[in-house]
Amino acid sequence: MKVATHFATPLIEFRMENPDAICDRLLDTFLECESQPDKYRNETKRSTQHGLFESRFDLFEWQQPAVQEVARFCHTGVYNVVANLTSQPEEDLARLRFDYHSWFHVTRHGGFQGMHNHQNASWSGIFCIDPGDQPEDHPESGIVRFHDPRSCAFMYMDHGNRLIKAPFNHGATQVRHERGKLVVFPSHIMHEIFPYFGERPRVIIAFNCWVGLASKKP
Image (tube, rainbow, N blue to C red; front, side, top):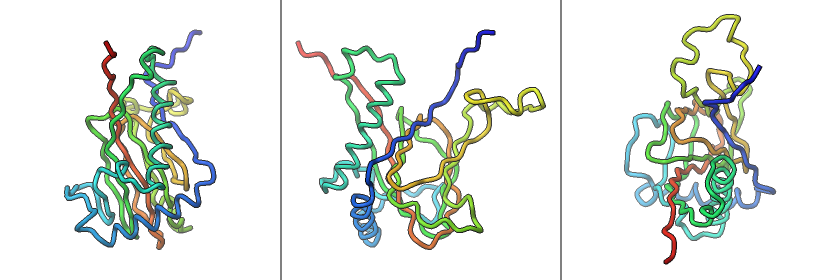
């Protein structure tokens, strides 16, 4: 029996070593920004967002050392994804040009984000600054759920396919935020963030990336 793995969807995880100091600095910075919405809030109102603060999309351009350190970490992650998961010729890797939209979210008690994806980008990512509290009576509080992009994959299930193994499994998969963890995923994947029921703010950085190829020098 020959088995191929067509149509698999990657979710890639990276972990920053010793993230507490940098995350603490960013937490203070972002909560201060939240208190100045006229200056830092994204002016676009989104019907999928409830009970959260979304910043402008220029975060990786901020020159604060802590922001730049996380931006480098996220960029290195995306670069490694492209280098390892595509058939990009070796000679072109140094010519890749990465552009980003990047922002932070502060989610308060009861906040959530409905199902959505990120258009006009190839890769997206979420870096956790502070996952907030994890109430025992709300085990799915603040979880990110990624949905199967194959809309018909689970239209019928029986004993022949219900327990099919990864990477051929279908349905949704869930990711719990942890401080210093970066999750990179294809931007077309529909995903949602469950309502958050902690008392401490839940704070993350998110980004979209599109990748071009710089012209060869004459």
